[in-house]
Length: 413
Length: 75
Image: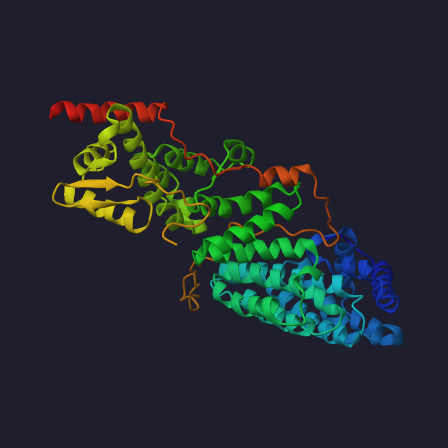
């Protein structure tokens, strides 16, 4: 921490106080944003923090002036937070910032116009990020992390303040997205439900009015939730929206969208071009796509094993595993086409024996009963049109369209 | 997906696994805006829905054919 003289400290603190109070008086949101962005670690904020730690009694400065003492409570908590932040006491920093945030939100409520909305966004962001740091400090000291959960409660409160009829309501989606990030990090994604319900059903909200960047983020997270719930048509719609409207320069975000969208597309029979996988470094899907194209069940199994950890972490493993039925369909189709080329008259009859031979070649040892079982499932799920002649151990394929395409719908729907 | 938060540790320092989300969307800047350029349309067009063709000339299909022909010979 740099050396600061008392005089210089006094000067810096007074300067900040003036900037803050002027920003509020003149409704200068962008200045206010800069004054509150702790995580930016901007030189002015850090040098203010040093000044506070030297001066120690900023409250007296605040009290001395009517201009400053109007926001006395807000400023006192803010300063305490910044001081703690500067010396690395992140739990203390969080606790003080939480008090600041509560006081700030109370003021915000009283301001009729929505001029300070962006500053409120900054407060929401900072509280989440500070809470995460505070939790890290708690766990590194062997204590139970609980600040991020607390930040979630505060964010819900902010949401409530914005969920009204006035111009402030366009801020609700930003806060929603901060809540999503909070809940996803905590692993309590079920808590997303109530805020989603508000956004999507409350009459005060018109989704189109929200800023595009918030809509993109919203669709990304709700799209991911649809993937968890195996609601593939809905997941496709939402993630595709996020993909289409995301800033093309934000390649990391695009990659994340694709990471979830690709399994969804595969589930409805659509495959990504190789260029897409290359461009966004999504090589974990290369063999899966190849397996689907070929009908290669062995390759699918290998691909799932090779990236099992990654797929499990992102929660798409089960989605990809279910592609197995589609790969079976492709394999059956190939067997059919091959047979048609050598003996067209009898091609529509697939002997279970022949299928078993193909499966054995793909390192899947099955007896005819098991093969029959699989074929029954494929027929039931409309991946194969035909019927099982059980006695003759043959699948009799429909002469017309025996392997119906998914046409953008998931299997068995 | 629910996290179970452990109780406070005993005398030892217990390393608690904090949940992470590997795929946290990066924040857009407050005033970040962008035009829907050609690039955007491009990304949305990188999908194939007519890949399920009748082509069996690839290596895999040829090997499959050989396997199946062996089986019919053995009869």
